[in-house]
Image (cartoon, rainbow, N blue to C red):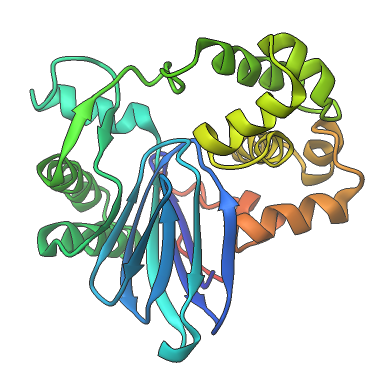
Length: 279
């Protein structure tokens, strides 16, 4: 990650990926919208594979399990990623009478050759880089409009697992004590299934085994705590990582940046203006 900005709850990162690099299967609590400036990558989401090439946009909904591998034949890949809280999307859609319910929409996921959406991502990135609050708000509204026009359906964001209430119960049990070690027997008992069926459940519905998904829940909570100003060492200890090094390696693998850099203040305190940080 060569640039990282945090403006009004939206995080914007610019990444230059090396040949053959990859992001393993992981998830985010936010919407993730990425614009490929150059190069190409193989995307996996919702059990489907996509090719993201120059000037295409990749869209992921909150908690979608995703992965990507950068094509070594194309050279390095340069892209911009936006991480947007569901409440921000829902608020903009409601304020502009685009949606009638205060819940986040379920956007079409995958890779899209959509010029309007591509330009909207770049516009938001440039306003963050140029420190223009007024232009940033306008660009964010434009981005939400472009995402809605690209396709969506309205869902209840609290119901992340509509196909199985028992699976949702297992996930909530995981969230109740993120520092605890994963115990398949306990999870299977909560779900009322065998360990074999529990593992098959997660792989088919969530897209990864229970232990790996539990790690993603810990990293999502870690990002929330770091944004709130908690110290990296305290976060690592509170969430049950073996040591700070284990936490740093797990965090960097998903975010492309260390938790210390992610947590560093992005505001100078002068008139509330964002301080641009080039890494």
